[in-house]
Length: 363
Ligand code: SF4
Image 1 (cartoon, rainbow, N blue to C red):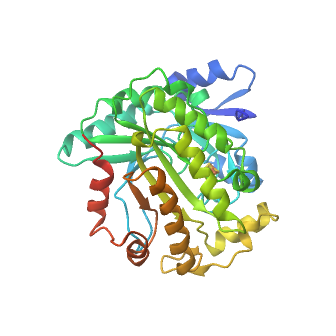
Image 2: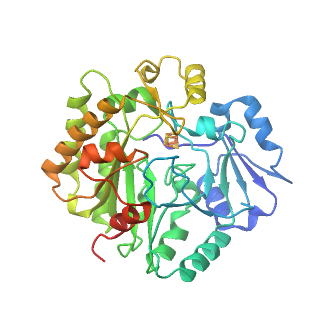
Image 3: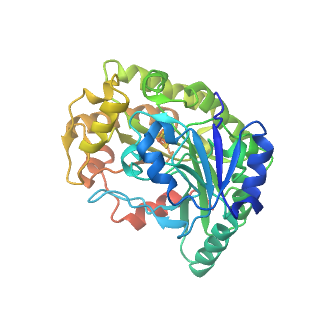
C-alpha cells in the first residue's frame, strides 16, 4: 500500500508540545509545517475547496468536546451497543461510497486531535465508574483506525492503556496494512484489530488508496502472530454479476491466511446510501457502478438493496463462513429484526444482549 503523505501539516498553536506533534515532525521531515493561532475557520476554507482536496493536508488540533460516545447506530435497526473514540476526523483514503462525504461535508478537514492525554483520562474515568459493564470501543467511526498511525503513533499511546482495562475491548478497524507500530506491543487479549473486507474487484473500483485484499490479509496474519485478536467486516457488500464467486474466494483466502479461532467477530452489511450521498458520489465518482443497482428507501432514511436480495446475500455469505469457521461470532450491521430472523433464525432481544454476546469470547 502506498503510504499517505500530506502536502502540509497545519498545527494549532499549543499542540506543538504533544507526542503526536513530535511523531509527525520525526516521520515527515520533508513536509512543510505551519503553526496557526486557531483552526476554527479552516473548515469553511477546506469545504469550499472540496472534499478530496481537504484530505491532502493534515490539521493537528485539540479536541474540545468528549472523546468517547455511544455509536449512533441507525433508527429502528438492531444495534450492537458499541462505543466510539474520535481521535481523528476524516480519512486519507477515498472510498467512493464513504458516508463521511455526507457526514463531514461541512467539516471536511483531515484532523488529528493532539490531546490524547485528555482522551485517556476520560476513558479511565468512564471505565472505572462502570466496572460491571463491559465496553466494546472502536476508533474507526469517522476515520480509519490505522491509516495515519505510521506518522502519528496514536496506537502506541492507547494500546498499552486499553490492554490493562478489565472491562473493555478496543477495536482498531482499518482498510490499511499499517500495523508495524502494533507488533511489539502486548495486547493482553484486549485489543481486536479488524479489517473491512471486499473482493479485489470492488477495491480496485471503489476503495481508492486502500490496501489490497492480499495486503490486508497479510497484515491480519502479522497481528495474529503478535497476539492480537482479529475481526473482519464484510461491509459494504456489493451485488454485481459474479459477486458470489468473488466473495466466496475472498472468504476462502481469509480463512486460509488467519486462524479463525483468533477471530472475535465478523460482521456483514450491504451497501447503504442516502439520496444526498448518491448526489455526492455522482459528482466525485461519476464512473462508479455503485450508483446503478436498484435500492429501496428504508425507514431509517437509508437506501439498501431489496430485502429478499439482502437476505439471500447474507445467507450465502454465512454458509461460506460456517463451512470454514463453524462457531465464529457473526452479526449484521444496521439491519432490521426481520432480516436477522430470516438469516440466523433469531434476532437479539435487545442491543445489550448482542453487545454482551460479542464481548464474551472466553474471558
Ligand atoms: S477507509 Fe473508511 S473512512 Fe476511509 S474513505 Fe474508505 S470508507 Fe471512508
